[in-house]
Amino acid sequence: DGGITQSPKYLFRKEGQNVTLSCEQNLNHDAMYWYRQDPGQGLRLIYYSQIVNDFQKGDIAEGYSVSREKKESFPLTVTSAQKNPTAFYLCASSMSGLAGLQETQYFGPGTRLLVL
Amino acid sequence: SQELEQSPQSLIVQEGKNLTINCTSSKTLYGLYWYKQKYGEGLIFLMMLQKGGEEKSHEKITAKLDEKKQQSSLHITASQPSHAGIYLCGAIGETSGSRLTFGEGTQLTVNP
Image (cartoon, rainbow over the protein chains, first blue to last red):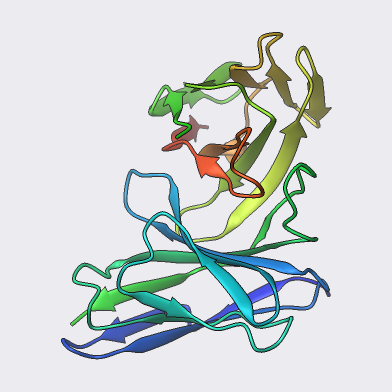
């Protein structure tokens, strides 16, 4: 089955700790995205990548880092600099991510991050 | 930047009733997406609208984009408990490239 997988489903972070959320897709999509969702709010874009070894900051990139070493993988690291990391994190992908094509973004099942 | 406002924020209906959710943009819409989300899960793509006046249907869900391309409505006919969840609209603006801006979502509860 083609799709997007995220792991783990739940993640706990201690003070001062960096944690990494996994996102893998086998849709052969070029573009991948990370969003954060807080209760009662819509999704906010953290980072996105349109091609391997390249990525851009979204609206709330501070305290987060990403890498894109492989087309199918786009891990997100929540660093200790992110002071309010408790949220639901969603990964998405689309065919090319090019402007003007109005492609559909497909989403993974999400990872809930909680602070101990 | 583009902002999307959804109304209502929450909605409780009796099974079998019709309902409408609205999504209003502060700027012209170049692509409007509707997604559904069950609590604690990912987003499921429902429909995408592009042209002013466009209307699309899937099973009992119909979405429209108005002629001026600044508002979309999502209508559910004869609602069922399986329709319950959070409905989110997402939009691409003129200068946002492939980036989507999302509304805050509408929480739908369908009572049997």
